[in-house]
Image (tube, rainbow, N blue to C red; front, top):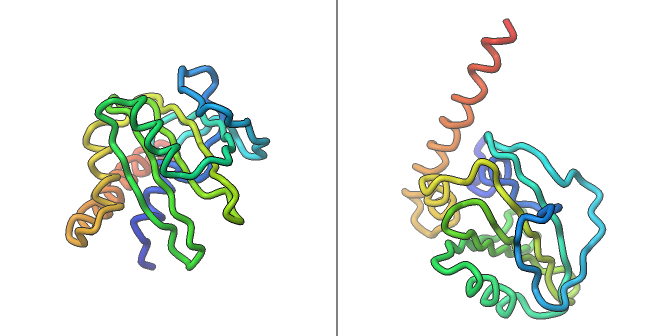
Length: 166
C-alpha cells in the first residue's frame, strides 16, 4: 500500500488537531477561545512526547499565520493539503529550536480557523524539520527521499521493541 507524505507525517508528527500546550509559553492569538478537545492532550509519536491544545479564532488564516510567524523569528513554515478530497489546508509554523509548533486549519463553513498549539519533548531536530518540509514541498524526488527516510526511521524504532519482547 502506498502512503502519501501526509500520512507519514501524520503518524510521526501528529499533524491533526493539537491538544494542550500545558503552560509551555506558547502565545495565544488575541481573542482566540479554547476549544473542547476529546482526544489525548499528551501522546508520543516517533520518540517525541507531544502536548497539545486547540483554540478557535474568527480571524482569517493568513492573519493568524503572519502573527505566529512574527512571534517565532526564523520560523519554519510547512503548508499542505490533506488528501482524500476533503479540501483541508493546514499551515504549521515551527519555532527554529523544534520545541514549539502551531497548526492552523480552517474551522469549517468559512467561519474562522482552528489554532493548534503544541510542544515537542525532545525537540524536533533540524533534520526532522527539513524532512517535514520536503514531505510537504513540491519536489517529488525530495518527497520520495523523505518518505523513505521516515519509513526507515520508524522501522528502526520498532525493531528494538520487537526484539525485546521475544
